[in-house]
Image (cartoon, rainbow, N blue to C red; front, side, top):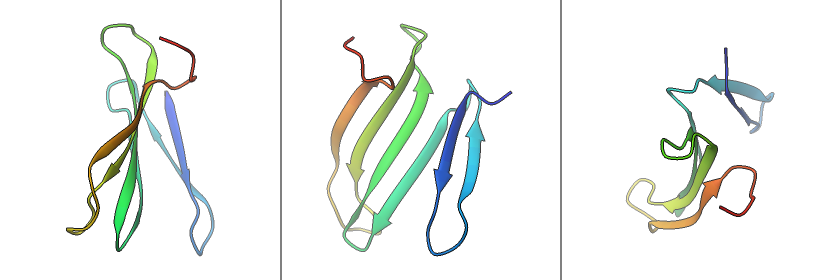
Length: 77
């Protein structure tokens, strides 16, 4: 059974993908100048659903910087 769910819509129809507790789910939104990566997973220490959102290089362009890392609910840790 899926635990995580992601969607993508570009110039075509929206598509979705799922991820389990073991695999999590990773998405990228990119341009020629860099990308944003979103990784949803279960934190081993707390057992909570967590997310890491980061700027990442893409095709040699862009920078690496974490924008948020914490509970996917946004609640304080």
